[in-house]
Image 1 (cartoon, rainbow, N blue to C red):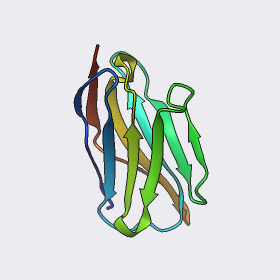
Image 2: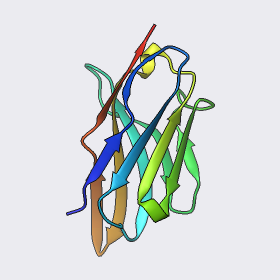
Image 3: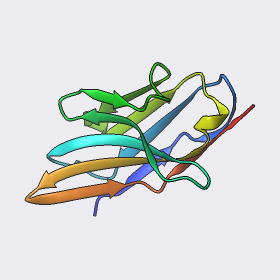
Length: 118
């Protein structure tokens, strides 16, 4: 069973930056998308950034211009560079990988806390 392990979260002041990493325990074949999701207290989990297997990226409106998603296939790792952080970016950030090998696979990490103070 492939595991995803996130790191890089923490406490940062508004305007600061963090870089989240998500490492897969093994190579995942036939990846469709790699993404980062956020769940703020009392709210549903929402998509923050997505990168497709071909390299196309999508961002939530709140993340556009501030966040950058990238991947290093050789290291089985996906990153989220977050700049100009705001208090509303606070939440638990989860990475997700979707693949299809005869059936759909949906992998989730355990989450990493990001807290942005004002």
